Length: 176
Ligand code: SF4
Ligand code: SF4
Image (cartoon, rainbow, N blue to C red):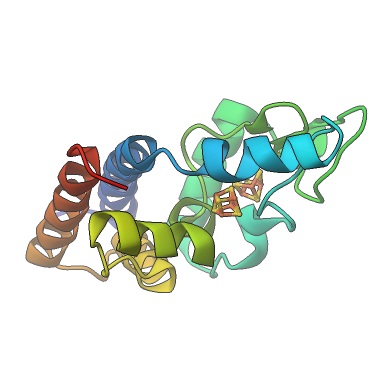
């Protein structure tokens, strides 16, 4: 017999595994810094920008569920409470946003923070790599379902494989 907390731990471990795989996808795609953050900083007279971190997204869309509590507890034990952060010149309402380096959470992000891609980045994914399947709200819900255990084992494996396939596609040399 597994208790509820064992199940939540298992789901959190899966969530963190997918987070690592998604981060691999984002770094292979390598869009945000070169195409958005860097040009925006230049436009802003070399002053920091907050890009798409314009709210406290680490909590905004969290749902009331033990699995979300567990994610938050694990995050705060690693990175501290949001209220612990006092930046000199904050540029985002999100306390986890370091004005000079971006998000301090290298892991344990909330689903929406992890899944989000803006319109421009999704367009480039389509135009350059022919990937039409990245739907950030869909990814957000899939992450939520992994965390809360709503996904079956096979749905989980299928989702994981789809991200690995996208990662391979964006890693191939391409012609712009
Ligand atoms: S998702 Fe879009 S807005 Fe956010 S940092 Fe990347 S390119 Fe910029
Ligand atoms: S937690 Fe990180 S990714 Fe999410 S809004 Fe804050 S700085 Fe952005």
